[in-house]
Image 1 (cartoon, chains in turn green, orange):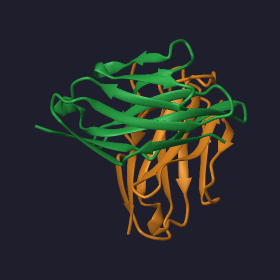
Image 2 (image 1 turned 120 degrees about the horizontal axis):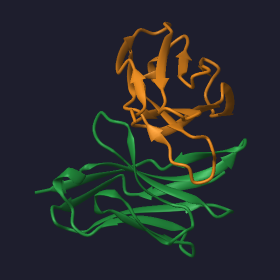
Image 3 (image 1 turned 30 degrees about the horizontal axis):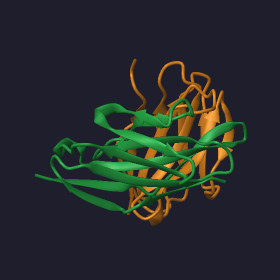
Length: 115
Length: 114
C-alpha cells in the first residue's frame, strides 16, 4: 500500500509571499499524484495532478508542483500568496487496488494567509 | 455539466439511529466513492462502487454499507449510529477508467450524532 506524508498541519504566510506545501509519498511503482484544495464547507477540488507526462505540473490558481522521484516528493508551490488561497490542501497518491485506483490522502495542510 | 450533488447537506441524529446519505454523480460517471472526513483521522476511504458493484472497501465496520443504482446514483447507510460517526461524508465520482483518473467531489453531508 502507498502512503502520503504532508509535513506541517499548518503553514502560515503573508500575502504576496511564496507558498510551499510539502508532500512525500511512498511507492514501489510509478505513482499518480494529486493535489486537492478544500475551502470551508465545501468538497475537494482538484488543483493539479502528475501522471508521468512532465515532472513540473501546472495547476489552477497559479499553483504548480514538481515531481522528484529521487526525493519521493511532490511539493506544491505558488510564487505569491493571495488571501483567497487560505484553505486546506491535500496531497494524494493513487494505488491500484481491486482493479481500480483508489487514492490515498495525506492528513492535509491548512494554509493561513496574513494580510 | 452539473457537479456531484449530495443530500442532505446537514443531518443531526441520535445514537442508535440509522442514516442514509445520497449522492448523484456527474452525468456519465460510473464510479462513486465515499469518504469519511474527521479532524482526527483526516480523509478515510469507505467504499467504491462501479456499475452497481462494490469494487473496493475500506477498513470500516459492517455498520457502514452502500449501494449503487443503475443510473449510478449511490447511497450509503450507517446503522446503529455512534458518537464517533460524526463527520463530513464526501462522495466522489469518476469515469471509473483507472490510471491517473481525477475524482470529482461533492460538497459533503455533515452528520452530527448526539
